[in-house]
Image (cartoon, rainbow, N blue to C red; front, top):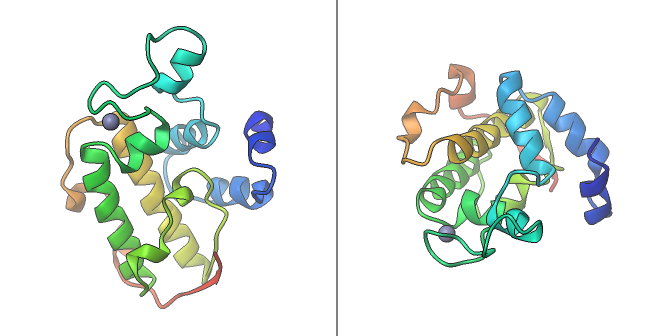
Length: 161
Ligand SMILES: [Zn+2]
């Protein structure tokens, strides 16, 4: 499992990524959605076009190349919700939104201290992926359904980004 994506990104720390994913405090269904996202097996037009199941690799909504990252952070509600997610995580970690890379959505190989912060950030990222993947309409961030504990700010430092 995960072999193809590991070859595509040989420099990513896959052991950390799979471990982080496994420890994310969310439902198995959500983990499974994120797992598919990380493995890049969600049927975007880029993927469908490659196997000739879509006439174009571009996004029907905006004409940009329809990758998963495009859906998650650039297009329509994806951009709006990503801006919110990025700011929310930055506030949790007491840092600037520019320190929260969108690559964390596809390769969450960061290690935060304490472990509660790690799990909280993973939880927020997983909600982001699940929201965009399953809900085309804008969802009010407050209704993300995060556990109360996650909503509280944590004293944390980025050990390794
Ligand atoms: Zn688009």
